[in-house]
Image (cartoon, rainbow, N blue to C red):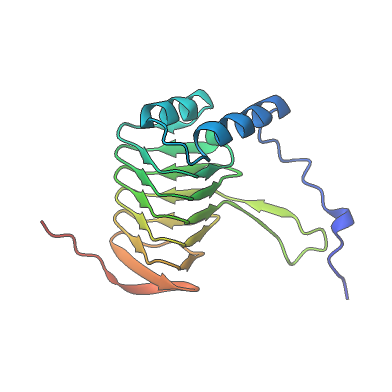
Length: 183
């Protein structure tokens, strides 16, 4: 029977950006984004855009947000990102207009292939469509799309896509009911 052998792990194919770019982001990200300093939103947005993030108007980004690589991030208009959200984006994360990611949520675009002895890195994008809401302390895994105006309840783990206007909850998250938005 084969076993995992981490000496065979090789992610040399993965090229997220130059060492200088990654180190620069590490420094600037800690100073301006992943901090409790009450910095102006315009400054945070400027820093994100300077590192390649596409950011629409009206972004609210709370303290201590951790973004792995802003050059793999697209944020629409009027988006809210809560305190201590972690966007662990080895590849593209797309956040649609009026989407909300509540505090301590984790968007995880990378994982490992547990079926391979080489424990290969697996990456795939995450898409949060317009009006999607990811609840506090929730986890969204690679390859998932949260449909327009969908809701992932607090503390849930989403490893498959939600349709538009659906509410999901649990670990693993499953469909609960449809979301009906009123005046």
